[in-house]
Amino acid sequence: MLSIGNRRSTIGNLLLAYLLAASSLAAASLYDQSVSRLLAERYGSSDLSYIVIDAATRRLIASRWEAITEPVPVGSLVKPFLALAYAQKRDFRYPVYFCHGAQDGCWLPRGHGPMDISSAIAYSCNAYFMNMVSTLKPEDVDSMAQRYGFSLGQAPSGAAQMIGLGGAWRIDPQELLHAYVLLAAAPRAAGTAELLRGMALSAQKGTAGAVGLTLHGAAVLAKTGTAPCVHQPLAPGDGYVLMLFPADQPRLALLVRVHGVPGARAAELGGRMLNSVISLQ
Ligand SMILES: [Zn+2]
View 1: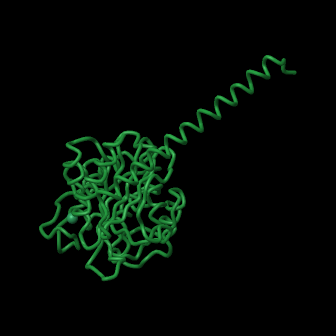
View 2: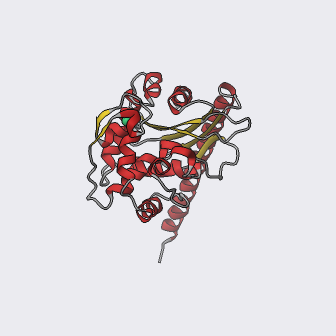
View 3: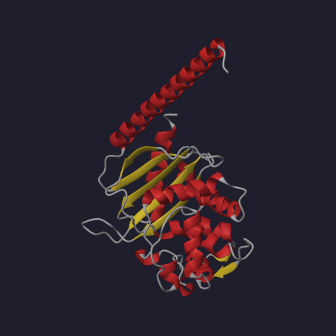
């Protein structure tokens, strides 16, 4: 049985815990408000959609995204997860493929040459991933997606559709952010280090190179995607960039979509937005 003194200190501790929780909640909401305000002021263009979450708690910090719960085509942002779906049955070993460029269906006409998984992620090599998914079964994709908490719907047919071209895969944008957060939170999980290295390389000198430039070399993880436009009037495509900062134990996760540009261009704007958000910390 508790003595009165103990009971008092228990109540005191509860009160203290409550006050601490309340004050950190208040601090979080003040922070969220300043991020929201800053982004709304500096990045008001209607061509721009964004979602910013706290990577540690998954709290939504700020967003401007029409129909935020509606799945959207995200192009190559699906590639790291297809790699996991492939590797889970192969002891998490990734192959090396040679990209000849246009003749292999890659976006880079002259080709990327020999690609391992990290460089294929960094440069978003289509040839690498089309090769990789040629043996992928829909149930492999399903079990991977389940593990990372998102749904992809029915698997498209054909390698080009499978790697995210043509917008066949559609993902809830917040679920996608959470999946990337989960990936980065367990860097030692089998098959993960190679993917995270690819995302770091992407931000340094790959398709998301603009992000690294804007952050003056601060370590960040990034991946770009280009997908069919979801707006009216219709553009040839929408560019996406997903960023996790800092690269080690990310605190922030941002998804940015820019109407009418490829993913590499979205990375320019995304990098500036991330830089603005970091400046508030
Ligand atoms: Zn290539």
